[in-house]
Length: 335
Image (cartoon, rainbow, N blue to C red; front, side, top):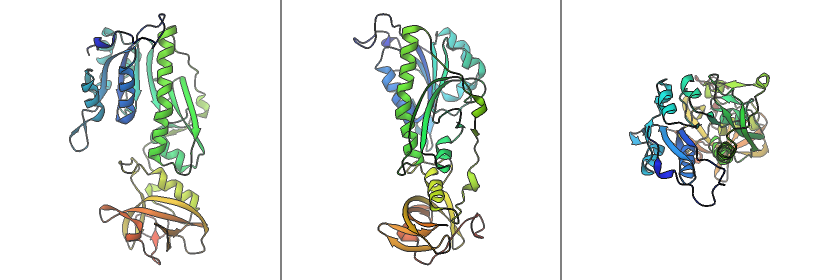
């Protein structure tokens, strides 16, 4: 790693004379990592290096990798965080803080301990209640009305370190896994900047330990194998569909699945209609505007987008009144 010496000067008005510039190492991916690096590059602190994926699916240059190089920053493969020798480089470069944003590599414990003030992760969930993977999807699946993002110190146990900042916000019916992730980014980046401000001005980072008796940890498994159960309430079916919805990006849970005439299809987009249904769950009803009504255990939902025949299609092209959607990998009723 090589420090970006072009950022040593503090722009006028950005900090008081008592503030010192920090050496920051960023580990990140996606738009959250890009936004963090761009805002840090405009501020008083020195970005020592950026660890990120050099390629994204399709062989294209990783978005954060390319953005960091355009800013003249040192870039390293994200998987380097698993190498304990990185800790020696961190100490040699006098890194004050390591910031981890949306990177899924497990960081070596020696690397975690190397920065002077610690390593911190921006976790897209309110700790300790939503720790682990795909927490945004789990919260939507559970029908939560409030969610949050947490900045915490990284320890060898995943998502268990002391909390340096947390922001809470409402979940709305229009939210999907994608929009809720974006809300986490919007609310989370100010937490990082506040951490750096405090560290630069006081040389310390205030933290509160988690109550780990309240901890819930989520792994890679998708609930119900990803299959919709149409006999459940419309609210539960709707929540499952939007928990999988990162459209137009790839979902870690895949599409919420159903069977139509023995063939698997994905249910991508749906809305609550508030209309009581007395048909067999899974029955396709009449069109409702741009949506196709599908009966759930209590009400109809309106399906607008599906994945069928290897492509994304409007639901009205695929679902016709009287058809029956089923759940389960073999199409034997609901899962």
